[in-house]
Each structure stands twice: as C-alpha cells, then as structure tokens.
Figure (cartoon, rainbow, N blue to C red):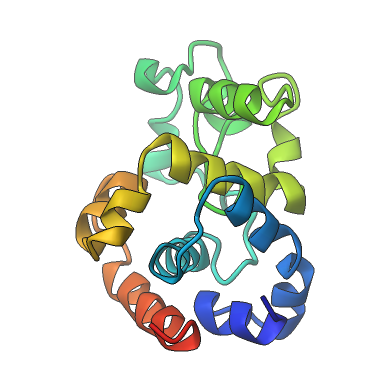
Length: 176
C-alpha cells in the first residue's frame, strides 16, 4: 500500500502515512484483514481513533471519563494508577490492564509490564489488527455494518460522522 493510499484511507498527513506504510499493511495481512472491504473499514476506524495516525497514546486530562478508568474491574484496573498506566495506546487505543495483557499475550510481548511499547509503530499496528481479529470485526466490515463495527470499537458512536467520512474515502481509495 502506498503512503498516498494510506493517507487517503486514514486522513493522515503524508509523513505519518509514510511512517506506517509498511507496518500497517503487514499487520493487516498477519490478522487476515485481507479484503478491500475489511481494509477500508479497518483503516477508517484506525484513522479516527489515532487522529490520522498521529496519536499512539491517549491524550490525557484526565477527563471525567478517563478518571473513571481507575479501579474499573471490567478493564482489569485493580492497582492504584492503572487507569493512567493502561490508558489508550496503539492505533485503536487499547485500554485497561486486562486488554494490555490479552493483546501482549497474542503478540508475544509483555505489555502488562511494558505498556508503553504499545505506542511503538509496529506494535501499535499489530495491536490494532489483533484487537480487530480477536473481536471478530471483519464480519461487520463484510456486511458493511459500520455502525455496529463502530460500537464494538468505541463502545458508542463517538465521532461517527468522521468515521463514516473516512470510510467513504477509504472505499474510494481502495476502489470499492
């Protein structure tokens, strides 16, 4: 995938697209995001969640929502400071101690011990593709069910208009 196509699919500046032009397609291949429909949906979601491949670490306030990460059993955050330590990282913003542990196990990296590694470009891309595969998201891309896909990634429809615009751009760039 050329940097120009990747930029069109994710809303990224060309320098950011160049930085991910090898690692992101490799991660998609590794985790069977292997049709234009799946790739368009994945890249649109990645583009939104990462602000055009810019944010590999969640911007931290903490906002009221972020403050609630602390002590969230569903995220595996049971130690003081886990909310911040296991804040969103990677191209799909993996969040929570339990999700870091699962993702790390799947990738063969101890992300629970070294959560900052999920912000490295290769692991940011692989972590996003791993999350996609682990949550069976290709089925929604195959059905063009972008709303359910967004809810599975985001928990709601935050930024849905931007995500849909990126999806349309990705579909055009990939000739769907």
